[in-house]
Image (cartoon, rainbow, N blue to C red):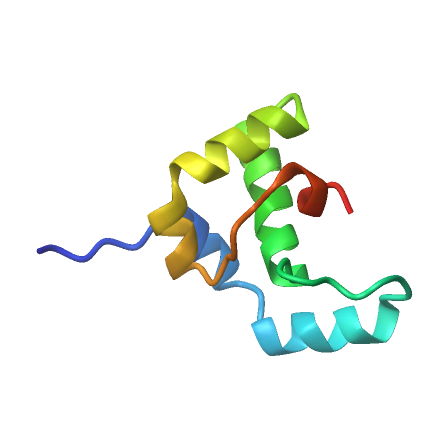
Length: 85
């Protein structure tokens, strides 16, 4: 099976996940995330911007259709409640 790099993976590779998590811990001042982490929310918001999603329901529907690809990006299950936090 051929391996291909997704556009989202290419964009996410510009951001160091270590530096992202370090900044997130420094500036986050709310409740802890349970199953949804900051990186997953960042990827969800990036997808929303790149695909011009108009609503949260539309964004979550789009992400859930691409579960396999999102899993390989390091994304957990995405729901509306977790995404809007």
